[in-house]
Image (cartoon, rainbow, N blue to C red; front, side, top):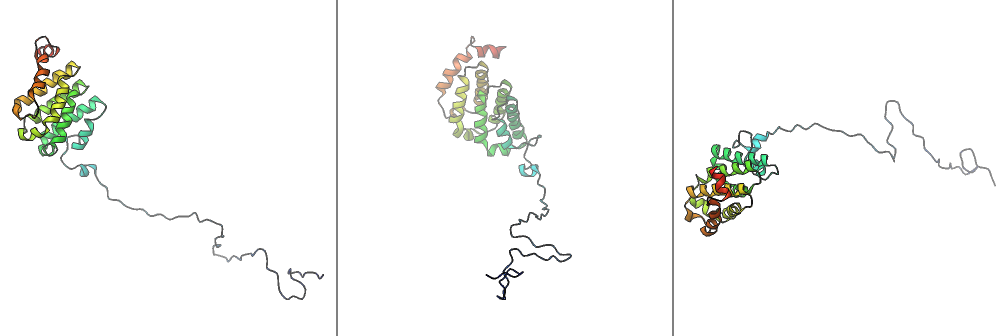
Length: 214
């Protein structure tokens, strides 16, 4: 057998065997090309300028002094903290005085939340709720209240028959505000359940009457 030449080919064949590795020649001033298995990790970025948006612009100008709109106050009235709920009730009163149209537009939602607050476990929050409810009830027309009466009556009966004496007392105050502002005939619920709930509370020996007298 003949010997292979220095180039790796047989003597006299005239062909060179292919090399296992090809060495790239680098030119001065030029970067070496990427290898087939090399990942390019560099990246480019540009700065994007976004126009600033004020929270007040989103809420509008019909807000309280603390920059709270109706949605903010509705959330506060559902808060777990009684002090925050009190802030929500007082905020509704403030918003009603400064921007009555906002409350009147969402009257069903607002009244439902206020009547639900008659059984609030926090004394100060509940009193703020009754004050706000009395202010709004005193100004609305009976025709606006009549469609909402069944739901409001359910919350009112719950307050009048509540196990907590303070809740029952505030329920009586709310009923007084309704009776003074709206004709009793406009209330879309029977007066008998209310009277049967009120008689024990209004008797001289009842705890509620004692608290009111004191």
